[in-house]
Image: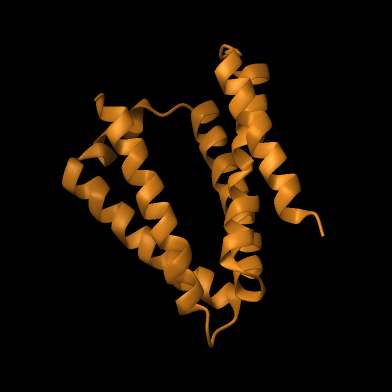
Length: 140
């Protein structure tokens, strides 16, 4: 199995665990405070990882354009996490996570349009099944 596939599976595993841990952590605190604590922990760990791997030394290779894209990504990640934490504070994790993961479809569409990634039939079918599952989930 390729390295990126193992990393993707680990990301999936930890993302799944994260949602349940966050729900426990939000039991008696506001969602925004919970997000602050989680983000602070992430910040410390990312700095430690960058120091450990010496990746910070490559900052000179960053262009203004790349920096702008990364900042924009940070802004959209913040908005995603903000609304995600507010949703899991008040809602059922099973529903919130399923709806949130439908973001895969948004990513696929943007990847096709902006990154010119190939629209393979199995990817389109997978996206259609995600959308169908989302409609089943949110239909009352």
